[in-house]
Image (cartoon, rainbow, N blue to C red; front, side):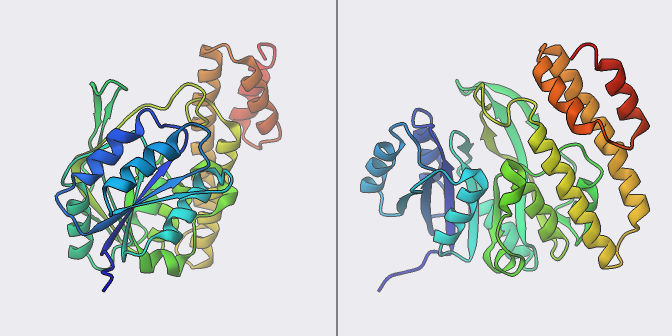
Length: 306
């Protein structure tokens, strides 16, 4: 009789055959063993498939799947989730290294909080050689009540939740899939959306070592489309809160405007530092009709440089 594992681990991968094995091996060494490992290959052009099939032949817990075409990162999230059978679904990424107690700690947190939609944790950043760079440590509570994490994210220029979490299947199925229209940061919208209806758990330990993005990765440089998606996610969330009677539109939109100004200035400074005047021009064109006096003034000052 076929036994269905309680946890599905979805390892998302694209074109990282050289560093993928260490991720696979760290997941196979988890001290909680009742899992399936789904490696979801987003149509990698390198030898990722050969690497994965070799591991799958050696360990029956591994299921390798390959998209017929590249679905984008968020499309791969949805494809991997759809293939999973566990009531708890972990989403992890290629190249990162996972502490042996990661899955157990995540699972224990969700079992202790049966109404929580997902769990995330502190992180350690390492380089490609495995050398420590820095920690992402936070004094977050072990439990965010409904709306607490979302309200915090509405005030931040970044996301406190990276792309690695364990999700409760029932909550995602009730809320709906990751939304493709938000591009590579569609997961940010999911974390905010889930907390609109459910609490969120947190483990205050660096259970994952994350590696840097390669030069040229879409999230390694200023990307104005991602910036537009970020603002759209916030606006959609604000409208949901207002519609539910859980927020004041004027207050939240003023807050978003301040946040947008802060993010735009940081991104513009980054393009100037790198002398990427092409990206600066894109940013100026994107915000030239913005009703923010600050953005219009700074844009006018920077226009000769672009």
